[in-house]
Every structure is written in C-alpha cells, then in structure tokens.
Amino acid sequence: MSSAAQPNSPVDQAAPIPNNVNLSADRRLARALESWQPKFLDWWRDMGPVAHQDHDVYLRTAVSVGREGWAHFDHVKMPEYRWGIFLAEADPERTIGFGDHIGEPVWSEVPGEFRSDLRRLIVVQGDTEPASVEQQRHLCHTAPSLYDLRNLFQVNVEEGRHLWAMVYLLHRHFGRDGRDEADELLQRHSGDTDNPRILGAFNERTPDWLSFFMFTYFTDRDGKFQLASLAESGFDPLARTCQFMLKEEAHHMFVGAGGVGRVVQRTVELMRAHDTDDVAPYGGVNVGTLQRYINLHYSVSLDLFGAETSTNAANYFAGGLKGRFAESARLDDHRLHQDTLSVPWVEEPVGTAGPAGAGGDRKPAGSDAGRGPPGARALPGVIGERRVPALSALNAGLRNDYVEDCQKGLDRWNRTLGAVGAELRLPHVGFHRQVGTFAGRHVTTDGRLVSAHEWNARRSSWLPTDADRDHVESLMRPVSERGKMASWVAAPASGIHARPTDFDYVRL
Ligand code: BYC
Image (cartoon, rainbow, N blue to C red; front, side):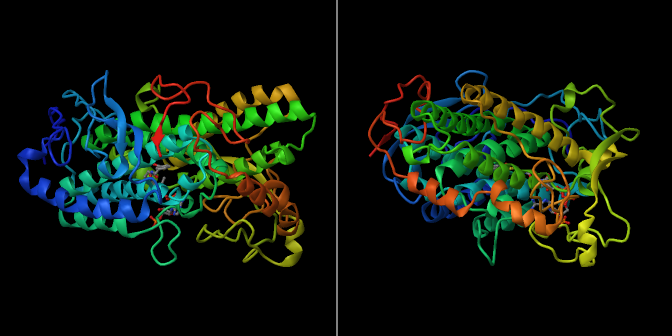
C-alpha cells in the first residue's frame, strides 16, 4: 500500500475525458472510463432534462483546480458539456487529521481493511448525484425565467460531473467491484419501485420549482456537510475529489437560498400591494404554503444524516475515513474516545411498546403500526436528551451543524418577511422523520410527542396539502422571454458571471 499524497498532475483538457489525474499514463483505466462514458451519455439523454438538450446554454465548466480561473463560462449544448475528473491540488505533507490513525501520512491507495467501508461511502455519495438529475428532469418545461432555467441546467450538469468524480474513484481504486458499482449507479433510478436510489430523499418527487428551490436549499445543503466531512478523509483521492466538488456545490446552494428568498420577496410585495395575507389569487405563494414546503423538505433532508447514534459513523471516524465538518478547526483531540455529546431521546411512558420503527427505524411518521396497546396512545412519551459517547453520535453532531446553517437562510428570509409581520421557522428535528430516534413517532412541529390521531388530524397544517400543491402547480407556467419573471418569484438582484439578468442564458 502506498501512503502519502500523490503529486499534482497538469490538467489535460484535450483528452476524451478532461482530467488532472494523469489518465493518459494509465491506458487501462482510461479505456475503462471511456467505455463508461457512452453509458453515461445514454443515461443523460434518457434520464436528464427532458427538453432543451439541443439548445445553447450559458454554462460554467470546471477546467482547472487553481485558486483563480477554475471555471470557464460559455454557451454550450448540454450533451456536449465537458464532464471532467478533477481532484483539488495535493498537499504532499498532508497527514490524517482525526481518528485512530491521526498524524500518519494520508493514503493514496485504499487500505485493505477499509475497502468495503470506503466503497460504500463512495457509492452512497455517487448515487445521490444522478438521482437529483432524474428528480429534476421535467422542471425545464416550467422554468420561471431563462435565468432560472440556466441555473437548473448548471446544477444538473455539475451533479453529472460529481457522478464522474465518484465513478473515477470506483474505477481507479476498486477494480472489478468498482466498475460494477459504477454501472449500477446508472441502473438505479429515482422513485423506481424495483431499483430505487439508496437514500430516501432521492426517491421523492421534485414536481415544481418551489420544491426545486427547497431541495437545493435543504437537500443540497446535506450534500455540503457530507462532502465537507468526506473532504477530511485520510483516503486522499476522496478528500481531494470532495474538496473540489464543494466549489461547485456552493452555487447549488445559492440557487436554493436565492430562489426561496426571491419567492419570499415576491410574496411580501404582493401582500403589501394588495393589503392581504392571501396572495394566491394574485399569483403569489402564501406564507403558510412556504412554511409547509419548508417543513417537508427540511424533515426529509434531516433523514439523510442517518440515525443519531451510529456504529457505522463511529467506525468511519475512528478509521480516518469520514471526519466532521471543519474538522481541523475544532479544538478537541480529534479522536473523541473520552468525549460525549447530547442527543435527542424519547422517554417511553411506562407500559408502552416503543415506536413503530424501534427495530427497523423505517416506518413513516403517519403509521400507527406496532405502537403498543390503544390505551397507551394517550401517553405518547416525552422528548428529552441523553449523553452518549461522542464517537457514536457523529451523525447527530453533523446534523446539528447542518441545522445551524439552515437557520441562517430562515433568518435572512425573516428579515424580508418582517415588513409584513410574518415569520418562517424550522420545525423541531423530530417532526415527520423516518430515520433514527424519531422514526415512527408523532412529533409536532414545535417538538411535542402526540398521539397518531392528533398528528394526523393536524397534518394538513404542517405539510403541503393538495390545495397547496394544486396552487403551486397552477403557477408553473414557463417564462421564456429574456429578463421576464413568473408572477410568483422576484427577479434576482444580479445575473450570472456579471451578465445582466436579461442575458440570453438559454438560446431557445
Ligand atoms: N435512507 O448507521 P446509520 C448530496 C441506512 S447529499 C435510507 O445511521 P450511517 C446531494 C444506512 O445505510 C449527501 N437508508 O447509517 C444533495 C444503514 O444501512 P445498513 C450524500 C438510510 O451509515 C443534493 C442503516 O440505515 N452523501 O451529495 O451512519 C443533490 C443504519 O443507519 C438512510 C452522503 O450521504 C436514509 N436516509 O449514515 C445531489 C455521504 N440513512 O448499513 C447530491 C455518504 C441511513 O444497516 N454516506 N440509512 O444496511 C454516509 O455517510 C452515510 O451512509 C449516511 C448514513 C450519513 C447516509
């Protein structure tokens, strides 16, 4: 096993697959990836955006990894996008920053003992990337502006590049198994009953642009935190791949934060212009609807952090495979054997049988199966906290960091909403959960355990209703005139890459 970081290679833009991993020196690997390339392009044609594939789109393409000028902007047809393989610059002195191997040189090859864990982490990460493209493939029919249409496509092509990033690792480091996994990444499909995507949120629908903005705010933000944790990895190629992916990921979250912010702004404009809380008749989205969409997308995204306590996560950390967010900035010993962390915990009422998901943790929150005798439902228990070894609570810790980051957007949107005395909130972390301590529990948005009956009776005040969805769907009329916006969303403050907002972002 070779240890220590591999040196940087120059960017080869002329290669069939642009790269800075010296593919031309490894013909076998290059050939394997070049034989995966047409399968990727077939997948892109079949499962990518359903329209505009032959139109010129003003896209950013990663071309380098240096501090300046890592991306090139130009009009390009999506199938001709130059999906490349780029690792962030190597640090030859880099050592493992956490876990039981702390201080040892990073690995440039996969250590045998961690082969299956690393493969799993890379496959889970890789699976989310094409999944999101599949979820968003119909949105190009209803974009609220050319600016937004272009942003959708930018996000899509870059998720495609992130798939390439994981496929490179699988091909380069996992032999036959890795090549099989890479093929399977194109065979599972979002929402497919027989062969679905691995994580729950990536099998949900993204039927409209409000959902898309919420997805890019809440679900892409999980991506930010997961990628940042993997960017700390002692397996250097994974760390460097994720470091570079994070550059692109920032724009995806901008699309979400800016998108929801612009909807909020438009709602406030309409509330003031018409002196009413009900802006739906004027082509806007009511604050109540926004709150219900937030409750849905936030709770589904929280599930992506796994269970609060997880031996998988403890093993990843101890092994040096997956760190914490901003690991190096933390002031503890980065081994965590002595530390503890508080995690949410449900105190069972005496004489009840526990939650629906106590064994498998997967029952939907609306389900009442396995919840003990009917009489026990009057006493649903209380939510408390318990201290557990910090190593076992890494998923909860990462989720805490995520929650804090999510709140920043809410604070910004609430400054806009302050003008009309309205406010948006993040629901309690236990609300509407299918993974972890709260799976199968009935938790209100303000964090009270209630009976299934009460929860279901109040469901429509918390989660998008048919009326919400119908109204949002009714607003989904495409706007394709340069500089024009749909009624329900304000114009952005500025365009992309210093272009005006009325630029021809997509040449129809
Ligand atoms: N759905 O021990 P636990 C992104 C499974 S998003 C279904 O708590 P662990 C992006 C789990 O696999 C970021 N199953 O799990 C965003 C395990 O199964 P096994 C994606 C779930 O391993 C937008 C069992 O339950 N990257 O990049 O500690 C657009 C026990 O759970 C779920 C990553 O996630 C779920 N939600 O944590 C595009 C990083 N949660 O082993 C892209 C890599 C858990 O018993 N992944 N399970 O069969 C990981 O670090 C971990 O696998 C997880 C789960 C954090 C996901």
